[in-house]
Amino acid sequence: MIKCIEKYDLEYNLLWRREYPFMQDLDRVSQVTIAPAKDDSFAISYSTPTYQRRDGVWCTFAPIVAKFDKDGDLIWQKEYEGFNYRAFRNVYCLANGNVLTVGTNEAKDTQSSGIKGITDVYISLISPDGRLIVERYHGGSDFDDLIDACYIDGVGLVAFIFTQSRDGSFSASQTGYPVYVLTMIDDGDLSIKWQTVIDKYYPHMRISGDMIHLEPYNDNSGEEIMVDFSGNISS
Image (cartoon, rainbow, N blue to C red):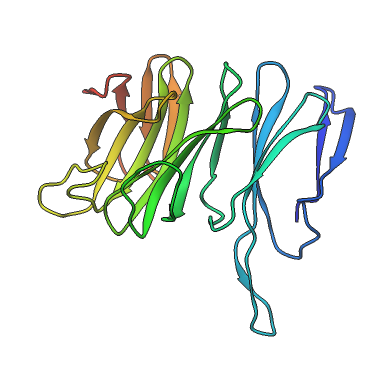
């Protein structure tokens, strides 16, 4: 279980250790994603999967997104009632101070319009003072799932998504068969800039230079493919 956050220098000397009220004393594994900012502040997402106790009672915990200064002091935190633990899988601190999140969530009512299915890709943008700027569900089928994502400074959020959609936001299949879609999302209004259909599943994504690399499993199951920042697949 995760009960605190510690910061070390490059020689592994402890600089500070902080415990926070939302890091509950649970005998279950919690998931934390830490996103550093250029000014040494940082943001985190903190979530605990739903589980059933021995007495049969189901325990659920609202995910939390929080921002801290360079000394680990809390600036703000947001608790997301009704969201599941995968809704904030990736968190990024942007150069303008905003915090960007992306993950997969069971669809709920949101504060902005969007196409909602049983599971959708959920994206939100939070201001430096913790105010929700915009949130969107991107989906349209019964099952839309985030595989991986990377933030490219000055370009946007690139997300690799599995979808069964034929007519939703990530619609790419005219036959109804599930597809994999690489999608570039604007980091201002969270709208879709472009989307490119990928012919198979790639579990890993990385950015190198001006190219997006989709990488297969480490079992010689195929070569990686490269896509430029305009959505063109490189041969």
